[in-house]
Image 1: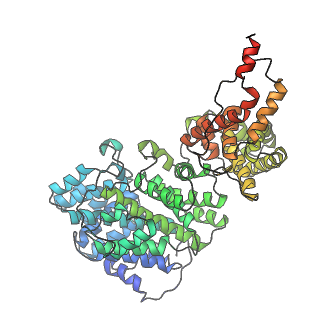
Image 2 (image 1 turned 180 degrees about the vertical axis):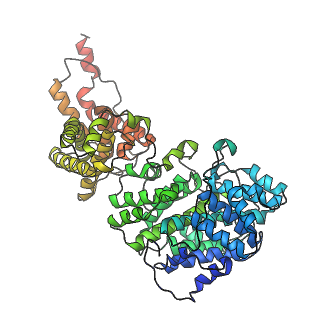
Length: 596
């Protein structure tokens, strides 16, 4: 049994034959997916192409790679499985034990040890893989087809390890104790390349007119991704990958296409895969998600204005991707409580596993991005994968930290003090979003109610005030969406970012004879701000009135820093344009004032 109920598909289920042929048994991880037979079919198709034929590598070499990669992933389930598979192929226990503990001591050819070095690095430090690692393989007379197959086997093993972590299958064999290998230290792996230093292997020119998988990719993506072009030495594997995309990523009977793209984006970002992040941001753009929104989902989905259900889903995915050893039935049950069915969760695991396969392929082959990345993920982003293990400096300096801790312990007086501290700021921000005082008051009540309900989940990765403004932003946005016609922070007020050009740009003269009283000036400014489109109005409120830093405003609104700066500049110009007739000194009045 596993975390999910299983369907009896019979002992002659054809897809199980592939696994029986390679492993000598059918691993329970595949029985655990029988609620979604199309997923099992897709996985069997890739396994059949990569594992069953001895093209570049022998079956024992593939098994040795998979055993080494399973150790690196810390997957006791697959270490036991591959240990048994290799034993059935005649590999002595002494050699297998050495592969598990230290493959350099195993009784293997030098070239095989070089392969295991390469695949271990690909499994644990893929973004640091470089042309030098490929050159080392070639120095051991390992050709391009063998290198490509080693990358594919490593990717498939990462897929299997992700599945076993997310599905919790009953172990097929007694688990093997494995050393805590973990990731190779950065100092030992050389310079950071980012997974795009290639392509590393030779390719064969193929046309979508004569090669159906390329025609499929062209139709689905609008282009043929380089990660598939880099595998043209193995058209059979590309065909299996196209079938997997069709069977796992395209259907919308459970998870929606947008949810699957969110999963692919977040898990790619956790893997520091700039190539795949750029590709999935482009896919989301075509589905109507702005570049800034996609960026925020990749960086921190909690600040991206997503629904609570989608945030819970991506929390689940991030942990499965980044900390599989900590994954448990509790994570599955938590997602069930968020309203997801077993089929939803099973599909989420399968999508994450398939993405692990594609991420590994891309970085192992070093393919260059098809879409110019808006952001390059590097070593400084590794902490994001920890997902709450460490708090950033700014969260530790939060002036509300003590009150938040008390409120999270059930102290109602502490929460009331937080409300008192932040009510004016929240109210002004909501006026900036919804543009109506009475509606802002109602939205403020909703904001503090949501904050009270969810303060137990606040992980202090940002200041409490920023977290609270994020809730206010989402609450205000929901009210805008409920209006007819719909207004949003992305296209409110009509037109694109380039539609506004200021005309009244002269200096406002400080002339007491022409300035209105302070109260009148305030009224003009308030009215001018309310006439701004919502997406500019709210940035102006947060930056110029609430005095948030650019980074804090970006976090609160779920936008990138560049977008905040652009909108703030435009908002100031728009407000200046609106107020110019009241504050600009005319040439004639100035001449009169000085007596000329």
